[in-house]
Length: 217
Image 1 (spheres, rainbow, N blue to C red):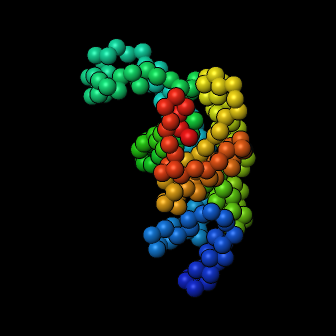
Image 2: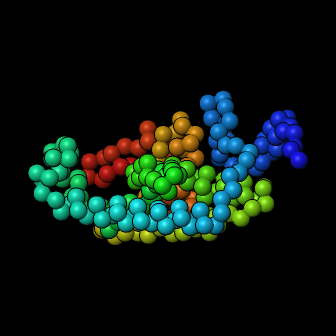
Image 3: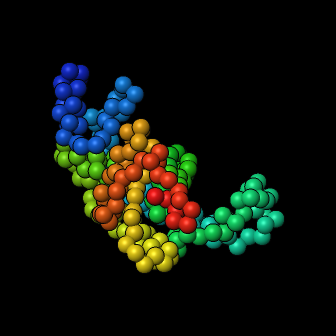
């Protein structure tokens, strides 16, 4: 038996839920961004996504090592600008990315990769925080349960490695930065800062300065 959709009730419930969330952009550009709804997935579908993501990650890391060991001629044939070659081989950390987002699409032949965003991924707030509230609201299990703590731990490990390599003796001044005028960028960055839990500060990009001999201040 079909149920009549009550738009007014839906809007009230949506407003009630998202008013509970701090620092979240449930509306963007004067329109709904976060929906009051949830797509249901089977445990098999979730495991398939995790398996595909892990395999894609291994290929990405393997390609990073391959590019760093390739001769200049091979990299130039890939249309990589010559002035970028030193940066291709530079490795600031033992890993090539700390946070990456794999964009997948389901086809008749299974999952396919659209993009691996390994430099400026977003959706961390939605995936690791907001999704938990939505799952509670609709009374379903959260497939990302406990993963926010794992993400915070991985960020702390990356920061510790970066500090070790910098060889600074004095306590560091750590900042998380983004464009202050964009809600999604700002609140995602603040969410990651809080998750890292390393006593860092949020400083907008326009307030950072690079001082010779000292770096960003």
